[in-house]
Length: 242
Image (cartoon, rainbow, N blue to C red; front, side):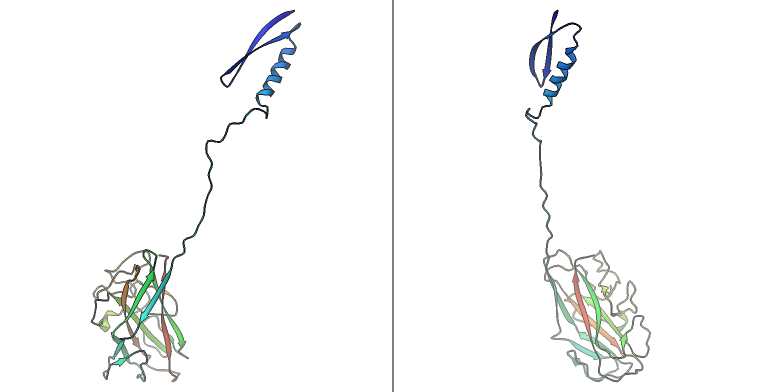
């Protein structure tokens, strides 16, 4: 019979154990297996995690509104006659052009840093008429234009300042939303939608309390299939998307 000593080291704690073996030492492997099992025993203390976390999600709610003041609006008929105040234009000849010489003013209220604005025509009661989109005079096609400016601009734009169409620089209002200016920018110095560089154009990124003048121009169709009174609206919608 021989007697041997084995030293097992784990986690800096040194334990010396004496194991009696007989013969060829067949039991040595069994003993070592038992000790290995003890090393991973659930009764041994587990190491705590270094860190942990939790995740919080929220969505900010912003306020967006726009108000339009028309108290001082005044229109002029390019064909002559007395100026017309307010929004009831009365009887107008087919083919007539009327435009604002005193504008509407809109004010944005928001807690968002820089809003955008969509402009859209609403056919409240146009009968057989519809909004024209290319500036070509045609039966039952009403042409509605808009230009925006700084509120310091007191003089009306020239008729030539209004650009036909609904392209990048077009100033026509149609029955679907069009972005004032250029999406994703503040392009107040160029000819963009509802802007004219030569007519005191202002940036279209609007913060809390910012105002713009809105000057409208109407061109009536040269002929009509419907003689009933016409009513339409201009809708301004404040947006956060660029």
